[in-house]
Length: 165
Ligand code: RP5
Image 1 (cartoon, helix red, strand yellow):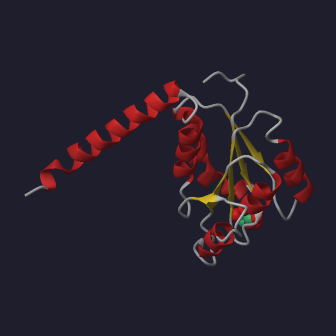
Image 2 (cartoon, rainbow, N blue to C red):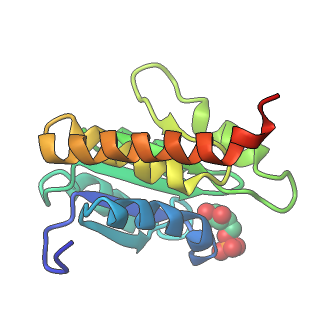
């Protein structure tokens, strides 16, 4: 992936404390050579920055937004309300409620404003989903995904072959 390439995926989070989870999304993008950017924009602490980011995302050339937040996790839904781009929500595992609060805040969107929500703490799946969305209009990327899936199947068979009786 070229450093200078224009980002196609925007990875945003409510706090830098979310980065250990969202890092896996950035790594998945990097693994497939998908240019991405990373920002902290909070729905509560910096709402105007969040609104500006979401409103400008499409004209800046982004194609997908991954938004992670924890607790009263309004960021993915608010961003989805302000952009025509697909938004993938990542519920962060919170201390008090183990991320159930984050999950329910993100997944229960009203009809008309979808957020594709991954499992609590699963930044990697968010990154992979973003890559898959981009691959629908990029045949080279599609080929990389097909190879990735083959490798995953082979690794799984190799790991589990001794368990078959
Ligand atoms: C949310 O509050 C963030 O997404 C984060 O998961 C949570 C806690 O933030 P910090 O207090 O760690 O900054 O807005």
